[in-house]
Image (cartoon, rainbow, N blue to C red; front, side, top):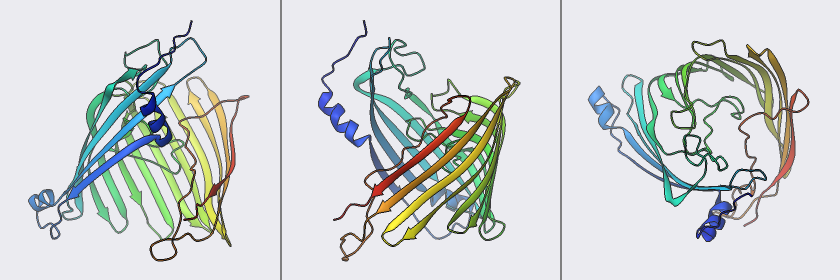
Length: 325
C-alpha cells in the first residue's frame, strides 16, 4: 500500500507552494576607476551572493512514496574588473537540505523508494572562466552558463537548485548590425544532479539570429557527442519569435521547427512549436502617475520533449493580463 506522509510543515508547505521558490539576493560591489593592472582588476571586482529557498512536493499515483524537499541553494560569485578587455569570473554553489524536510529520492542514493526531486546536496564550482570583450563580441573559456533562445535545447535548467553549466570555449559575435552568431565547443556538461551525471563530451553548438521585422529569425545546429562513445545527438532547427503592438494589446508569438537524430539507435524525431500570447490592459498607476505593469502569469519552460505517436509537437495559446493598480 502506498505510504502517504504527513509532516508538521504543512503551513510552510502551503506558503512555499504559492511562492514556488523564495529567492533572497544580496550583492555588494566595490568600484574603482578602470583597472590599470591585473592587481587593480582583481581588487576592483564585484561580489554577488544569491540564496534560493525552495520547496517541492510530489504526489504520484504509483508505487513510489510521496516526496517533499526543502532545500537552500547558496551561490557566491566574484567577477573581476576588466584589464585590457580581459576579465574573469569565479563562483561556488552549495545546496543543503533544510529543517529535516528531505523525504525524497535525490538521484544520488537517498530514499530510492520515494518519488524523484532532483535537488541533491552538493558543493561545487559553479562558474570559472576568463573572457575577452570587444565591440565585435565576447569570447569565454572555462566553466560557464550557456543558454540559447527559450532554453528548450541548450540552457541552465535554472529552476533546479544545482543549475547546469558547461566547460567550454564560447563566442558571442555581432559582426554586423542585427546579426548575432553564437558558437561553443563543450568538453563537459555539468548537469543538475551534483557530479553524478556529469558528462565528458565533444559538443558543437551553433546558434545564429538576425533581427527581421518585428521579431528575430534564428537558425541553430547542436551536435552533441559523448566522449569515447558512439553516442551522438544532432539537432537542427529554425525559429522565429517576436511581438506586435495592437493598440492596448501586445501579441507575442513563436514559430519553430526542429529535427533530431540519435546515434547509434538511429532514432529520429521532429519538433513543432507554435506559441501565441496576448498581453492585455492599459497603463497602470505608479509613483509618476503612469507606469508599466507586470504579468499575472508566466509561461513555464519545459525540461524536455514528450514523445507522442512517433513525433514531437507543441501548441500553446494563452493570455497574459496586466494588473491595474
